[in-house]
Amino acid sequence: MNGQIDPKKYQEAADYIRERITVKPEIGLVLGSGLGALADEVENPTIIETASIPGWPRSTVLGHSGRLVIGTLAGRNVLVQQGRVHFYEGYEPDLLIFAVRVMKLLGVGSLVVTNAAGGINPDFKAGDIMMITDQISFAAMGGAHPLRGQNLDEFGLRFPDMSQPYDRAYQALVRSAAAKVGVPLREGVYTWLSGPSFETPAEVRFLRVIGTDAVGMSTVPEVIAARHCEIRVLGFSGITNECSADGETKTTHQEVLEAADIIGPKIVRILREVIPAL
Ligand code: HPA
Image (tube, rainbow, N blue to C red; front, side, top):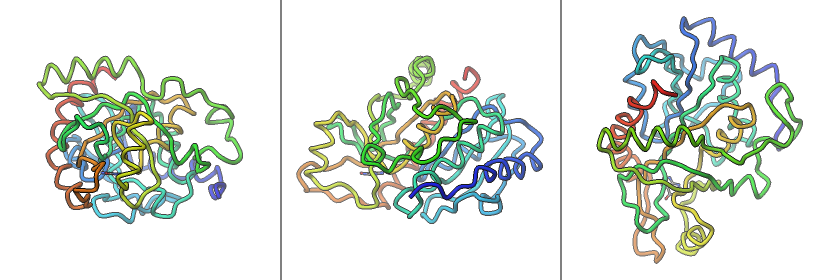
């Protein structure tokens, strides 16, 4: 059940962070499994362990370190969230959006979300970068919705519009940036499943039929919360593995982390170009 969060908790967490930083973050970045290296690019960083922030949920997963790195990147004030929490860790959906709401209170107007994802589109290869153009909230459609429960009017509407979850102007910037820096770019639909089990062959075939290009266990709740409070969103999936529709190949967390090592630097090259224009 949602509804564990006292709305005052967002403000307490934002106050705690604000007291420790000197820049006002304009852009939030959430780094997915194994994609944490981008945080090393932040200049003049202030590092805050998320475990020290009141109310902040704790990540329990290998590859998710649980830090905020606040500073400048490509000339803009950024707040980089290294490590996120997932539904499969046992958190209720409303806790998955805690970070985004705190970012909103800190003044963030643009959010860049990244994740490690399985390739459902048969053309995709491990190591590819996919710009997310739309999403299917599988778990939310089934009722595990981050905005279920009392609406917090100070963040947004009871029935938020989701016609453009990923900002189209930002997508145009990414297409030009990727071409300029020579990183091949895929585009497609990301589907959120609860996890933690990877998909069966029948589920992979099902996901293809419904229009999924990449599948994963994160991101979508954050994007819903961001759009609810009118933060503009840009999203990337790093394709870490090719999902098998015939059951002939296995998926492991280890291969996901290894592929993420190759993907991270490509996303960094694109973001360095795009961030000044967000
Ligand atoms: N399925 C779901 N989530 C994932 C995968 C996958 O194949 N790879 C990385 N995250």
